[in-house]
Length: 509
Image (cartoon, rainbow, N blue to C red; front, side, top):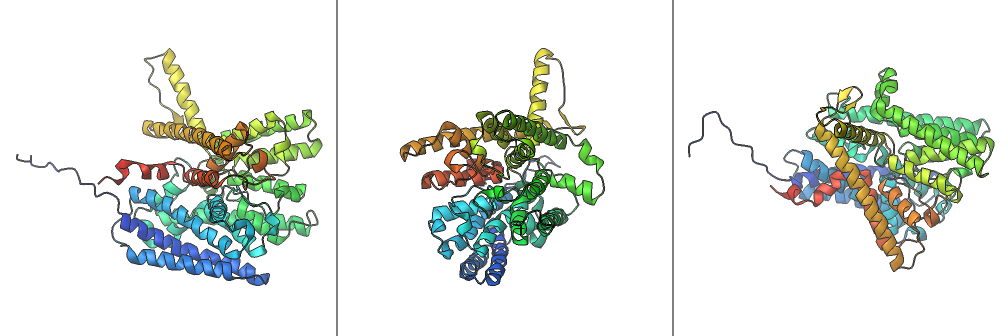
């Protein structure tokens, strides 16, 4: 059969460049291994053993270099490979994070599942912990635990985009897979410039928070918030991680420090791209006009008011303490930071339901927060409103607008599908946790199981019951811990980059 002149056949799909993707993973592991230099500095400063970190560094560096050597760096990294690189690198990152725990000899982290759980919780900025004696860690191991959250906050992949020139090809797919939220609007023509700009803002906010907390200490407002503690908590606040050096979280510090942390949690839960344009490009009106930011603030204010009123009327807190603890916990749970200024597990059922609700809302797209994200709730609400209008007026043709721009129908379908998938995984996780608790005879209520599933999938941190803000996840079985590790991994990478790897079409040529 003769081909018509001027007609070109469709290009052949070559499938996944697995060797090239693994080669990139090796590069990322190699670069990540150098992060272990920081805890070595603290180990030397406090006369502690450097072996856990030097040994982990050697293992990670050797693995990264070996992986690069046995794979090929030829070929481009496209969307398919981007999903693989992001998903697998996070598994490797958690393994690297677990090595110092295992090599330290600390009895709390001697079990590989426990060490991997703690490391995955750190790099995914979840903040859930199996530790029962946080203050029993030495300074260097403690700072490594905090630093894993800071690295995971803006994302190892975004950092790699800023320093690895060869990721300029296909880099945008990697950035969009890594940065939390449905879409990141380009800030510059070159992807490495985008990464550098975001990291500039991230580092700047971290430095500002360390300074603000340290000033409070030097002014005599909080004797316990030393510069060391300020750095440790900045490392876990800006990534909305929630790890603390104290067994009772932020309760150990003064009200002044708690208000400072509230401010930076709220900033960390906002869109970093929006903040960059508003602050560094001097366009503050963009913030006021952004629909997601307005809804984000409304959620924080409304939920805080509800919790404060509940605390006051139930006699659980009074005066400034009621306002501070109510606002603190709502901001902490909405932004998926997971800090606790008091044991909110002892609060009323209504307060607990509000906190569980904001857990599922999450922060803004393009922030370091987890969960579903405010913009998805906003667009799903607009989509449902349109469907109701078209039910009454079938002939009506209406578009969904966001920030005065028409939202593509494919984007709306993707957001709706993501939300349904998220709810489905949350429900399945809850049921599986209940089933496993019954198997091992663990006392776990439906609310406790739902909170554990929501907090790990949403990268939030504390749950209720034994895994509450002043407790830990140590009582769960290894099987349940493995399930929650998977949920943390899924939630941090926004489900799709991971789920797509388990589909048949992904691997087809």
